[in-house]
Structure formats: structure tokens, C-alpha cells
Length: 212
Image 1 (cartoon, rainbow, N blue to C red):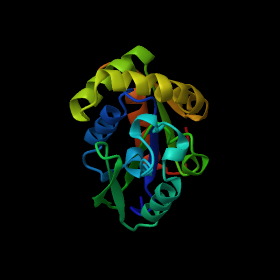
Image 2: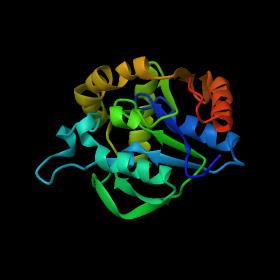
Image 3: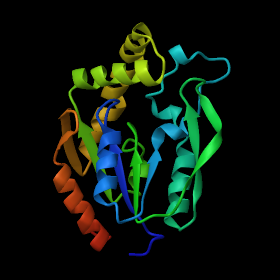
Image 4: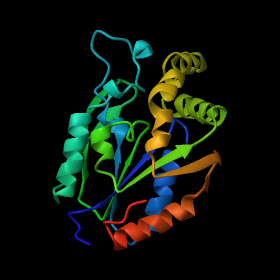
């Protein structure tokens, strides 16, 4: 397979569904093959100078710089490296630093809305949705935001009820209908269907015209 034409896998699902764990599972399984990961969160536009992070909907499609993300996917598909932005969840702005993403045989794009954007979805060889119960996702989100992002419980609850939950219903959950495969993850590290996904990725690598 020509390295300039990667197998592109999109992994979506609600915040706390286990996307990062699934990505790491794929990377470890294909450790002999070049794998790169594009994070949707890296393409946040950022909170306007006149706005407040508490009143900003990070779970709305308009929060993402889709033009840049799609441009980077096109560039990687043509065999050219890109500088993926890095986003700071403390200052809610892009960092000055960026991360070099090189062309690879497998390119994984992960984020809650990657299947919601039609242009991005059209580039995928395989669209995966991770389905996780809402209470499990919320519990994981609380742990992550308090530990990694210094948020208070009250701020997490406010953001979840005002933005995260309604945006999930409006933008994220409907992506199940356009996914090629739904993987369930209600127990940490246990994905129902992950082995079948790995099997299909093997098949796509051998035959890039294969679809699910």
C-alpha cells in the first residue's frame, strides 16, 4: 500500500466514551505499521476574547476549525506532513507550539464530532461510533476534568447540563446512523466489537477499496 494513501479511520462518540483508549488499542495492535492520530480537540477555534469559557459551547460543530482540519487530512493523504495545532484547556486558546503529524499507513481521526462533519466523513474508509451509557460518560468526564483540567464539580455539572448533554442529543448521537460500526464501552477498557474492528482494518489495509 502506498504510504501517501492512508487508511483513514474516524472514531466518534460522546465525551468520556473511551475514544482515546480505543485509539491506543488500535495503535498497539498495529505497532508494526505507521499510525498517526489527529485529535479533533486540537482544532478548537478558541473562546472569543469577549466571551467566557463557562458560557461557550465546546460541543457545537461551530467550535471546530473544520476548514483547517479537512485541509490537513487532504495534505496528509497526498504524502505531506502537517503541523497539528495544540489546544490549551486552561487558557482556552491555541498554544504557540504545534505537533508534526507525518504521512502514515493508518490515520485515525478522533473526536466527538468527526462523523458529524460531512466533508470529513467523506474522507473516511471506516467510521466508528463508541456507544457508552450517559451516566458512565459523565462519571468519567468528572474524573478527567477535575484531575487533568482543574475544574470544580459545580462547573462540570453546569457545563454538562447546559451544553454537553443537549449537544450530544443534537449533534453526536445522530452520528450512530452514519457510522459503519458501533462499539460499546460501558466497562473501562472493554470494548464490545473491538476485535471485529481490528479485523476489518486489516482487511482495508490489504484492500483499500474495501468498505464496511
